[in-house]
Image 1 (cartoon, rainbow, N blue to C red):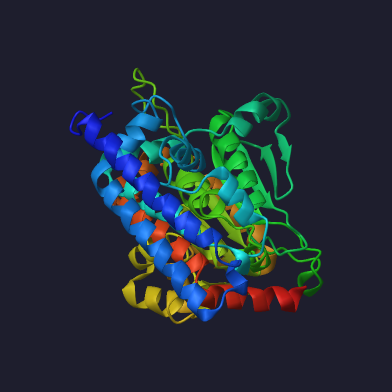
Image 2: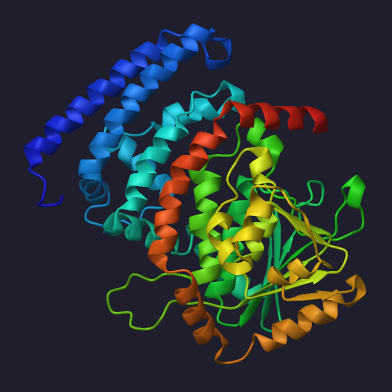
Length: 433
């Protein structure tokens, strides 16, 4: 525990927080489920949640580093974002939702949820706002996953990994990650995030890999049968069904495999003097990169697109925030184009001049394979890794990303449970059912 906080004061304040949260829970328990509430009951529920959230915010403003120090035993336990929130729920009653409360939320559709992930957002915003605690969490999320470590020996032996959402093949020093959700146009969900982080970890851990490639596979979806598709963005049907979570998808994606594509794998050994393991990455875009697919392109070292492809970030129309694109797109493409794409929903065709701000090469579809292989060869040079590390450090300082993600944690949680989003994803799910 931080020596700056008298233990008795922290103990008494955590008791008061628990009492305030318990009072809110009693009020909520007396009401019908969210979708069955009258207008007056919705006002009463909002007021009860607001009172508890103000208490949580005050507590965290004062004690966030003490909380993280206690539950991580002075940062000696490397907890990932979901583990950190779960451990905090056990150690500090009323601070964040319990696993049981979250399980109940996930058992129903998005429209039936109480919005408890907002309370996780309040907690994780405070953690990431703190330089000490935020850097700890970001470092923890850059470590290889336990799943990847279990699979590493087999992958190094065979050079192959088949998962539900990703196929990984090592060939000629290249880790080739193929997105293979053929029926859903590679729409993103929690399984895809898990599989992608596993594949990225294995590519980074395997010394036989020099460079990585991400490309969409051949689709069986009726509209694009027989064609490669890069990514259709977040799976809105999964959002409507309540299967997209703050810690399991929205934050894990940004703090996990996307951040690893930029900064590689972290290693907190005190005697490690070498830089972290990093490798260059190429993306090949067939047909389209929508939403999360377009966000992905912002972290690659080289992007090749077919001339009949397009890019878009329709998150504002969907009602959510497009990950870290609000931080990265303006830097890469300029503030005006970023606003047109994110706020206005502008679609960028690969043949437009502005597309060259987002991709490095545009070639005929039949020439894409050859262009990809050329780019992989160029990025296999001995000095590429060192130079990309320095470029990324200059372009996106760690603390800039940390501060952005702090606000993103709460803003995205609020948007995920906002009425307009629930209505939109519900209508979408009805159309595709």
